[in-house]
Length: 299
Image 1: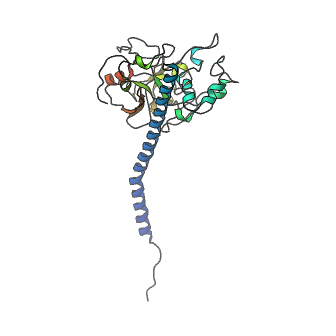
Image 2: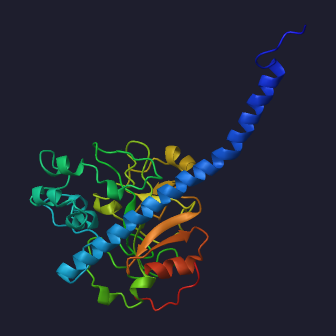
Image 3: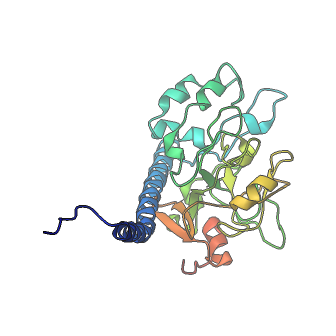
């Protein structure tokens, strides 16, 4: 009488393991895509909230907030007042407690007052697709920046043959109203994504710092062309392999994200659009200009 066999032979076990491996290999990309879709949706919702906050600010003050303003104590670097768009929106994103404690006689990095405030993480300003970092003094970097036009932070005109077109925000410059956006709110970007520096000393994403508070459309989204950072802040050897090349120079930051294929931006009407990195460069720059009179191409 033959004995009954229980369990698997070695060959059968190897076959089962191989089948499981194939199934995992097939399912893993789908899982990763689903996770990224959820992160992208979260990022989109955050930009919507910021767009609504901009409208609430405008309703109260009859103007947009400053991109960045240089009101600081005598002798201080104008880039360290802390009075940028990210602070102006705080009362409208349920962060009024930070505003109420702000010491306007001090810079943002004053150790016993404002520095302690900005070390508190504001989750709305973080895109979940990026890796959150603190590359300077335990202050969180963030993933959104104001639209500063078509050339660089100081509005160089022209720059590499590109004519400067005014945008809704300026660093150390004018404050605009919605009425100033004659191209139409639905045709003009307000905020878009930027990526965070990933090594100490690379301060990309430190939007509290005036020179890093905005992006420009001189280059396309997710461009391989380098960002320009103040001397000493560029860590190109470490960052270029991560898709974030840089050189030293007058601040010029391109829109960047970890979303495959492009970046997200909130327009003046509060809508959020995914902008493909293959967008025609003239259309990209027209989205940045608020009164250039140009007809947008498809994107």
